[in-house]
Amino acid sequence: MKKIEAVIRPEKLESVRIALEEAGYPGLMLTRIEGHGKQKGMLQQFRGRQYKVELLPKYKVEVVCLDAECAALVAAIVESARTGDVGDGKIFVSDIEDVTRIRTGESGESAV
Amino acid sequence: MRLRALGVFGLVTLMLVALPSAAFAADPNGAVTLEAEPAVALDFVWMLVAAFLVYFMQAGFAMVEAGFCRAKNATNLMMKNLLDFVMGSLAYFIVGFALMYGADAAGIIGTNGWFMGGNYDVTVYRDFMFQVVFAATAATIVSGAVAERLKFSAYLVYSIVLSAVIYPVYGHWVWGGGWLAQLATPFHDFAGSGVVHALGGFVGLAGALVLGPRFGKYGKDGKPRAIPGHSIPLAALGVFILWFGWFGFNAGSSLSGNDLRIAVIAVNTNMAAAAGSAVALLITKLKTGKFDIGMALNGALAGLVAITAPCAVVSGGSAIIIGAIAGAIVVASIYTVENLGVDDPVGAFSVHGMNGIWGLLAVGLFADGTYGDVTGLLFGGGTAQFVSQAIGAGVVAVWAFLLGFALFKGMDLVMGVRVSPEEELRGLDVDEHGSPAYPNFLVVEES
Image 1 (spheres, one colour):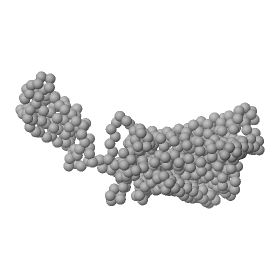
Image 2 (cartoon, chains in turn brown, red):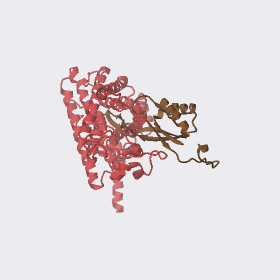
Image 3 (cartoon, rainbow over the protein chains, first blue to last red):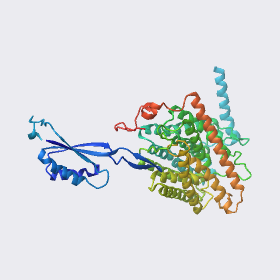
Image 4 (cartoon, rainbow over the protein chains, first blue to last red):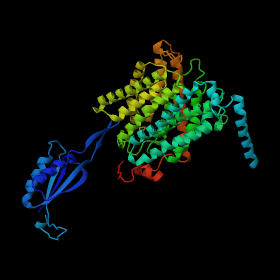
């Protein structure tokens, strides 16, 4: 089992969710976060003076899936979240040791 | 003790009883005044409606300051804008109106009408209502310059002193028949570029200097940093309200609904604001590449302040030039003041102080002689009016700055004027007032 953590632009959430749905995802978790990558924030302006916003608002989408589904879901996110400009975000994939469904108590791959 | 109190009581009673009969027959009912001159009803309605418009400018100032400052100080700013009107109204009733419009002594101060004694008359009450909202406007200008770090108790003391002394004394010199009004070529400040705005602006500068900059305003390299305000819509709403109220401020200063010059005054007021905003917008666009709303809003206010003195004595074309120059002055002044190390969070000095002075000088340049026997340099009036304007402008700058500095410095020595660094970082709302402005929102600000 894998966990996909995708940091995306907030305005791309809708297209990412639709793409994941089309790719057959098991469900997702969303966290509203702030952060920056190599882009290091952006300039804004107040009364004629510019200032740097170091941390920008981003959304983090997390999907836990079977190993076999992972590549297709990652591809769907890359496809739907990309604008080509700096600040498009990143995707992290890690192994998941175990999953338990609270309602039934079942665990492992059948709980994904 | 008892006797002494009786003595004071007797003195006040004497003033109340003796003065009206000596000065004029007071008419608290109004019927006698109306019968003597029915046309005066239009003046009453015009002046009072204008006064109500000027009162609403308090809301404008409150919104501009709240919008341009941070959420953690919004309650404090509402309290300051409320309480300067509260304290100012009381102080002006008790002392200020008498100092400003009482019987003149040596051209320096007015000397009767304390506690409005002897003034129980519809005409005087009309004039008081019109004047008290102007006094409170001067008081509320300072609030922005000292925002986000001044102790609330110090602000209460300041409000009383400004409304009871600093404002009425200079006001007496200009509007109360004092020495500036007695110059061979009388100093002309139609609605108060000097009496209200320059005065408030220079007291604000003094306050900002005594307080020092807000934490985080200057980086380790000493360069000024932007501290963005928390609500551009509130700041914009405030400017719309001020622009609206200013029609009462300027056109109401005709003091008569039978004076048709009010049409010219209204147009001039509007055109100067538009020109000021347009020029401030263009200059900032050239400098930063963006259409900056903060500067466009301040530019409109700058034009309004500058046209306040000359609004009745110039044409619409001149009003546009005066407003355009005001827009350039406010942008240059905001950058310069910040670079000199003075932190004026909303630009109160640049808007009201600098452009108050400019408005006074503009009378001596652009007055065209069609109204009020005032003619400026550019319309064949020679230098006489300009010299009088320069004297009045210099006097208000020195008077307001020196008294403002003495007041804030004095309060600093006695009670301290600045909140603790911890309180400043947390914001004044909770520590000073116990009420965050937005209790159900998490407000996190690093500096």
